[in-house]
Image 1 (tube, rainbow, N blue to C red):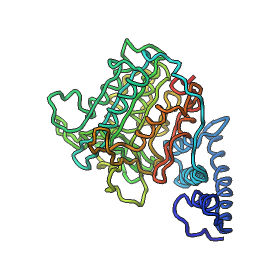
Image 2 (image 1 turned 90 degrees about the horizontal axis):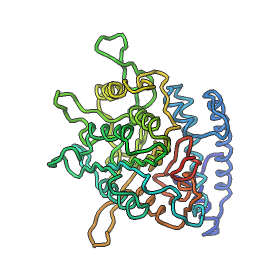
Image 3 (image 1 turned 60 degrees about the vertical axis):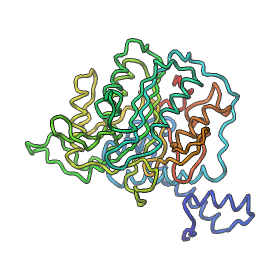
Image 4 (image 1 turned 180 degrees about the horizontal axis):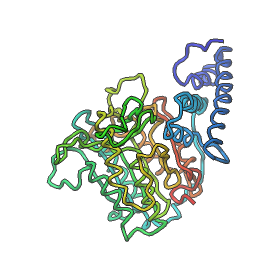
Length: 414
């Protein structure tokens, strides 16, 4: 049977017609059954990959996808896992998401044991954004006024513009890496303290199979041909020249993950990463849509420099696993990450009118997240999964949580 001509998330439209308009069509019911059958078949492939990776217990679809991508297995395996996740996303839209209703209680962990780095970038040499700096400011306000985090426990890097008297406050590549690594060596942060790392800005994605590096060539230091994809955070000085005339690269997910591992080894695993950006790769919609937080990858030379630069920075840390290793895999035990959307979706901002009457922009994910955390919906026993499930649903972006501790209590991760 051919699928009916339905818009994206047609399963939700089907239920809407059923419950609200009372106009159920047999073809739509059949299509819903097809979705269920398709998921069952795709889950078999996912289970086989999970066993291959040595995973036990409940299968984490996001972790399977990340390992498949990191290990650069065949395109077919990666596509099947990715398709399974996309198809699953039809199901949450069957009914409006109300989320768990849990009596509200203040966080059990003392606010004095919270630390945060908040990064917001509006200024880019190309494709500037609006709302990212205000997102970071909103997150800081939430941490101080709602959670009670001491202001001197919060470090910020704001990029409303490139020219400022104090360059140490700019979210350029050097400052971001320096500030993140400072968490591991900060003597005031005790083992088991809560660390929040927030980023609002552009993300990008490098399809490494599109690049070729000849490992036998004396001018090439890394061979990543056919290595899947590498996601990246985009500092405000990306694609600009440093003091040596070298193009400044993005911050790869491998470098970021390696830094999180070092922080975890020093301070424990109570690390929460919040990313209001997107890394959409093989997509059909244009990236020039207003408010989209994703830019194209940089050149081949920058991709290589991005990985080599990470290796130079991290190689002297104890237990470091080279980001250049062909079998590199992300450490998903060091942190929990909350992301604005799936890898094939867009993170967006929207125009808002503030209390003082001024017009500005807010990231949809950040605005929804802070609103939920300030509400009475979540309580002391809520987990990261509860948090994601309780967030509002949008057809263009679906928030995601990843990490081995995502089913643990919010902030505690025990």
